[in-house]
Image (cartoon, rainbow, N blue to C red; front, side, top):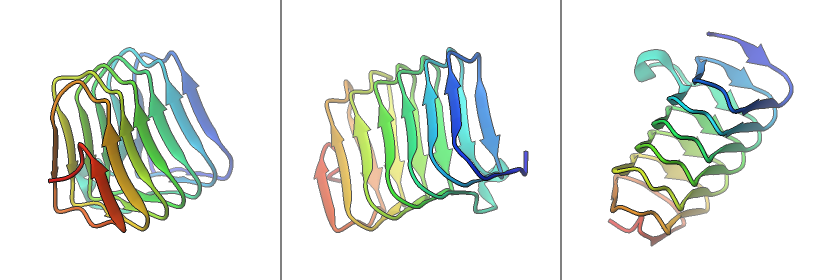
Length: 140
């Protein structure tokens, strides 16, 4: 908690992943987690950052990404649990693709380019987002 990491953060096949109140200098890639993935701030009150890309894919547990500043792209792809992407500021694109969990929520994000949701097994609940273009299942 509360770390500054200058390089990449990668996790594969962990039980759980929690990156709380941490500033991340490069890319973040979380794959194959069997439990929950939580990236953002404790209580969603601080503004942690990922300087480049944040990718969360093929995890079995729930995924929550909250109050992050992401320099380039945020991708949440192929996860089996519920997904929540809340109050993030993203410098390029947000992509929510092929998730099979029972709920997908995308709320109050500020996206410089595109917010795109496609191929998710269940409806995407999307509201309060701003983007150059909102596409696919992300359209409110």
